Image (cartoon, rainbow, N blue to C red; front, side):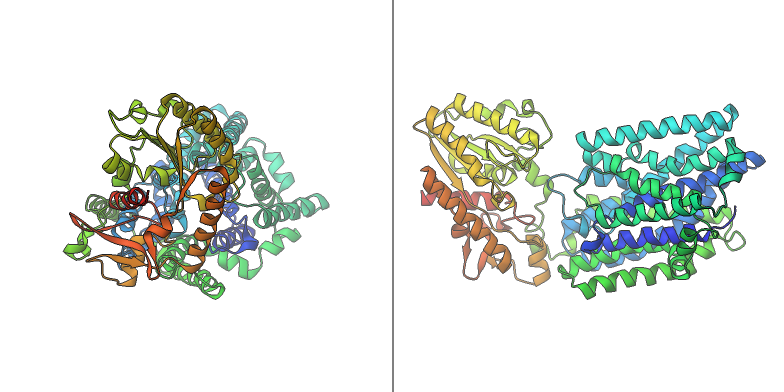
Length: 630
């Protein structure tokens, strides 16, 4: 197959765009389209090889997968091997290291896209801190190439012209599904193959069309007339504009994705040494970066994620240094890993497959051990293990997840009957709000017995919240109906109020409705709980503070100021509406910081397991303080 410098130049644009996007350069707000460009290029190049070999009668599935293994696995596995000790040293929070081990397992099995889809919920830790997040795109490609060669081999007998139409139909179906899923299942849509397949097919259809219509190929490539010049430059313009003007708030992939995909297709069709577009993309610096683009892509996310985990706020110079480091590591990987392993004279087919099998087994073993050993919790001193043992699984059990705390996209009939049970005696209490409200369940249960609970992720107790997902309105309407039916003594409203600026006033309608229909009800608004942007466990472990007894940890000044401003708005609103207000900050924080570790009957325990969601101990502590104040 003829080598095309302009494709390496296009790869360079793609990998630079992705790196600058992940390094948080605002001007590269659409840099994520680099992945879409890679998909189209991959579909084009791999299909070109398959078509050429099928036409020559030399196509072999074994040779195909050997070529893919030589291309993908050595650089990937070396990156994983080097990341493992780095993650061991840097990711000191066992819960975070457990997540890393899960991703290691998923990468080895080519299902990391499925893992990150499963983890991309309301409680997902920052994607910027996941060293292997970027491997989701490799998993999509690997899954595609488990299917596509069989598809080509089986349907080729139908004739290239018929395959053209079949490929186009499949691509259009995938695009239509992506558009639908971008609205109804946006996270699934981003990570799964069915929504991404059309991008790979957009590149694949080019050599298939050329095989079915050979005269078309000879008339298109290469050519230097005004049409080719214009369309090649248009392709570059579409790609550059996508990188600069798109943003992560767009539904993606969707019809919007046609812009960079079409730009890539135009370059593949019309950019050559005979056109200005081809000459631009064939510039030596771009070609050099394009040659190392795969290894650079592999290294950029681990470099950025591990640096962020260690240092949090990276300056402009830090981020530029991380991009440069990824390029250097990519160059070294290309020279000493990628290139040698592609040479069949240096590494035989047997060596490639055996070593791949052994390393996959190793990564799977480490991943499973890290998962079942809770991120190797024993790395901490024995006395610290129970302090840091509380993780997401414990939290979800404590808040009655999937029963009285539901995800925002679920219907109201997912609330279980137990959420509406009233106590046999004493005050009947309703807990209404988002996950921060759900975190208080254990505390109210300890001190007040049975608690009615209507909570949902990212859904504050605001009756007409137009900024939240539309389903939040339905969930809050259901909660209001239940409150009016159950006639509780007290309704507690709680949320991560800081996340909903300007929306607090929208709660007035709910309060007015309760006041009107339940004149005797007490309505209590609970303010913001402390937030630690790093996550409280990491904050403590990285600081080296003692956690053998009660511990107060400062909240960053800017964060604490924002929490206080939000609380002042809440208190003013509550006073105007004649409802009670309780400041959690006043109860939990002192001059030296906010309660981070408290003493319980079982010993010292964390008050929060992440940036602000209360543990069972933290919940019981705060609710105890609230009830004592009242």
